[in-house]
Length: 201
Image (cartoon, rainbow, N blue to C red):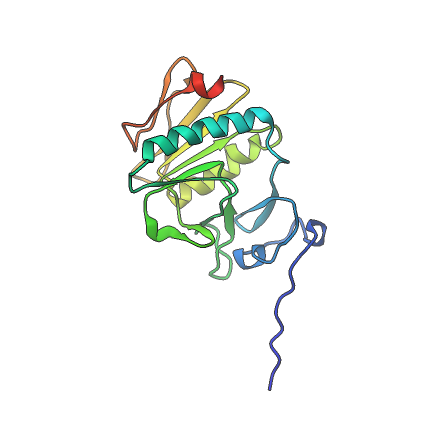
């Protein structure tokens, strides 16, 4: 009778190879304190605890989204919340697991006890010092490829938001930057309008 050897949990981030390639199954064994994301199997350390401005902006946007989607079929989730995207799969297994600052999921079949398996309809990322390159490049590409219909990048330093809409051909179209002088309007949810002055206040 053969003995089944179960994989051991990883309790220290330093035990992982930063240049290694991982899957969601690996990710589920990680029990260290640091927050990380997987993008196409590559390990990305997340920024330390968000600063005060980031938290205030996240709470303000979250409040607007929760109010708008109250008693509607779509649900709003805030980080930490795992979103598994079927891009860059490794050996047929998910190898992209991200934690957007905020996301809206309208297809309830994508939700399970571990988070969201598939593309949310709307993703919001709030830039922090040290993570701008990752959000602008790596996450942009995986959200586009996974089919996230609308993607907002909120820049606290510049008090503006960048909005990307997924074109029918599967590519993002960038709209004009939205400053706090203008309302932030969703294109996939036309009645969703956010006053950025209040968010950035």
